[in-house]
Image 1 (cartoon, one colour):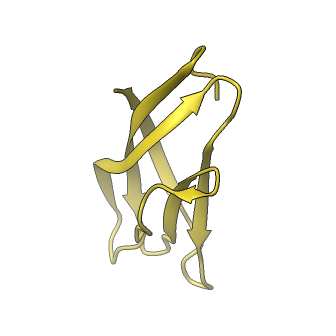
Image 2 (cartoon, one colour; image 1 turned 45 degrees about the vertical axis):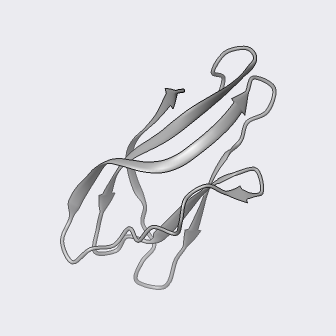
Length: 88
């Protein structure tokens, strides 16, 4: 992900779908957890918009975002609609 030169701080805003087969997820910056573990499952499908995940520092020389997932035999899906990085 290239976001320009220098280092900037961004707010991470996510838009995703909760599904019956959705898994739990978290967002990480390098080795640091940014968001809590967020359940991605629901009894019916619905969209979660404008969920604030946290802040991240991004430099042009180092990609930093990683999603981690907790799955089981019936919760294996993650449906990301979009992620916004709002420069602070």
